[in-house]
Length: 237
Image (cartoon, rainbow, N blue to C red; front, side, top):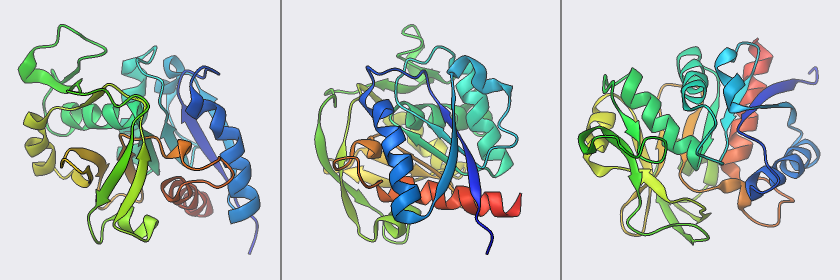
């Protein structure tokens, strides 16, 4: 079989001050060496993300919000969702995946993110401040049996590391579910931590940061899952 290299868009405003960003090069190398998954990675500043994701085999929206361009990030997520391009959103990427879905699938056209728009009306706030900050927090996430997350993990729970102050407003979870988004991971209190889109080749978002798992010498299963899906996508491109 011919060797396949997949092209992945790393969407985020790259900064050495964001720990997850500094982990990425090592994780890409680890997947190449340990897993045989070769990814040609392109860092895309958020203001350039709306130019289109054509030609990429995966899109990973990284932590680091508030992003310089919310609009362009949402366009990148929409392109991946509608185009069948493997997608992973972590931390801010999770939050914006829900926001994009609410606006463009659920018809909640005024859906807002309270960090980006502190004046957003309560009934439109899909992403809101958490009751308790998760910056520096680590906890257990329980996953739904049979979900993509569970299959990737090979287990029904995982340890999760966070660095966020915002999460989904419970009032909007019902309409997101009604339109096809599934919530397949929760913390010990039952709060949503993983979202998936069934029927898509790979569409998964986590409020936690799997890139911070371990010592950085081996990628978290959710990340290797994205890489595997990217290689599969490249094989058919």
